[in-house]
Image 1 (cartoon, rainbow, N blue to C red):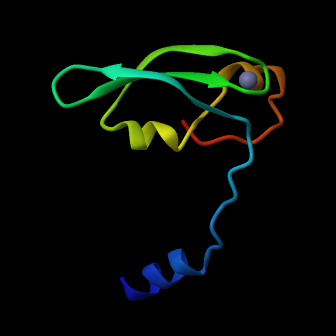
Image 2: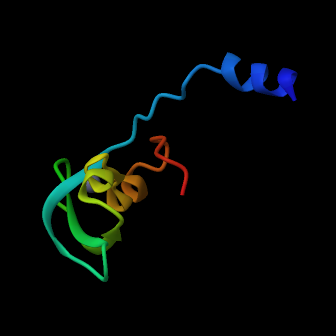
Amino acid sequence: MAARQGELLAKPPRRMRGQLMHVCDAGPGEGPRCVVQMRCRRCGYVSDWLQFDTVTEAKRGLPCQKCKNDHPDTPTYPG
Ligand SMILES: [Zn+2]
């Protein structure tokens, strides 16, 4: 177990490069959640309303599916 943890720590943090979309609008969602619309500053794509636990979580950004499709070689977040 200790060795496995050491391996994980030894890996350098993966740098996230791909184009991220940023929050452009937000509103209340179901229960404690919220819904957020994201926009890509590169291609102007605006997402559907997406559910997040918090707006803060959404503000970390999401990979732009349109840019990802246009530039499949650009690495983005998994999933
Ligand atoms: Zn884009």
